[in-house]
Image (tube, rainbow, N blue to C red; front, side, top):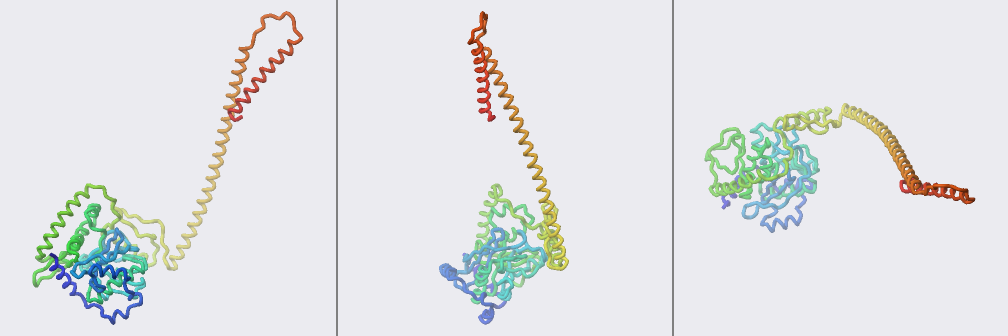
Length: 447
């Protein structure tokens, strides 16, 4: 169904510059010549691919993935490897200007001359930013790479082991005759759910444009033919004989294979139904995105000051949805005499502030401990007094009760010799009863 389009795409890809020959490859650094692992080669063979068959790459920022796809014998591409991106800088959204620290989004082309086997970042290749679309829209920047060393200031950085394999895929494809390979860089997988999440984002219209290319590849599994006219991407469009695509001019009348039109319309119908359902569903909150050229310009100015050795916040400023700008108070250290001097003063100031805070905290802790001890003593005293009062009250009640139960003498004729001792014993008995009661009560109340 798509064989014609596949052949067309392969022919168009051949328009690029001549590929590397074996002698140029021999000049590469040793780690640039490492072969792909046997496991990957076996997987490729099982899928109908050769080591030197054409290759392409897809990047998804939010998911942090870099995918490698290779052509099978039928001309369609299949996924052969997926890598976790070690680091990419900036936010979701395209790169606008030099110094905005954004990793590019769009459709880019890598040719042999862009491969760097002696990169300071182990291995690298330039993704080709700015491309025709970027230049038509006045976007600037340079040296945007996929490289190793896991360090990024606008690039897509991998581990050294990962970049050795990714580099090998491109190297082998060039050796097989491919003259250029495509890199598709997206903010996220352009599913209905993700597009619904970001439908209110200022970058949404740009992402909708990228999605057309994304959808074309999802349908055909062949890298789309990419052109630019009216300052926008167009995909798999064929201009009439004698006409070309002017990046800043009007788009010519174009045609497209009927089979592709039909497949694209069916794909869109399914997508729209899923999108409408996703709008009503509960989805994860969007990730931070760049606020257009305004935020890019603010970050770019920060980068310029930093490059000049000026003292700037350690993190770049961030543009908020309400138009305000957030800057961190922590200043970065610049490797210059003035920067080192200021860093030393800041460190001294921070140490003094920390010591003062610790001293005040110790004073407050001592005050709190003293107040707590005083409160505990007062509480204990009040409880003891309450217990004593209760004991005395119960004792008095017991004495009153005992007195009420004692017999009352109505007459006395003569004193018996045993009368006095009996009275004394009765008194002692009463006193003994009271004493026992107090001791009992004290025992009950912890006295």
